[in-house]
Image: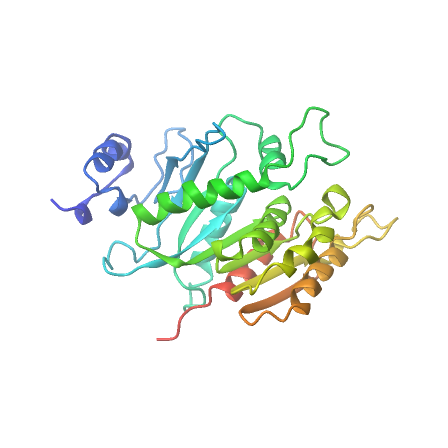
Length: 311
């Protein structure tokens, strides 16, 4: 039996995962099931898989969640772009669903391998993202007094040195075609990667980036960082919700920060450099706030950075 023949239901999935890994067949592992398991067991995202990929430099345990495209098993010679999404607890199932639904009637987004970047194992999600997605030690005023911030560059290096090699060794990827997707603090992290090591990804979806963090630290640091770059060769899509603008007294809007203005400022800084390889689009999505805008922004972002290829 070859690797491509490994197809089974959930009853055998856990037991055979170890066997598949040991025999080198994990790259072709496909868990197929027509229904959920029932009997009060937890709901599963069928066809997904979870792997432990720790940050050995910092001694932090992380996981990645992986979903292969529907055509993966039947096209053994084909390679796929990879979408990496932060805040995987909501970002992974959301992007997975969008990628399937949007192509329901006709191909609109290219098929992709999806990788969700988890929070630290057994760690509070907000504590994990405060530490990993922010650029300075000075946190938000409402953060707990003992909260850790400012390790985004170390987390960037973890993605670069541990996650990407793990994924590109195990599955049939197109190494030159990596997409980053992040919202809020995840958008802030993506903007910092774009400014410091833009070649890590060739597509960026930066959703409602928290440029307000530490008195707009990254916005203020961006001009000299951009001065050091010869080019940004990437498709970039930035979005923010209409109600993320500041309008004191109107509860639909932000009361302390203006994320719409910040997004516009960052987009303007990028455009002013006239980078030959940069394809930039930025949107203010109407009738959306910080908590509602991500599904719509992710959809428009995928359409911009990963449009379906013409036959």
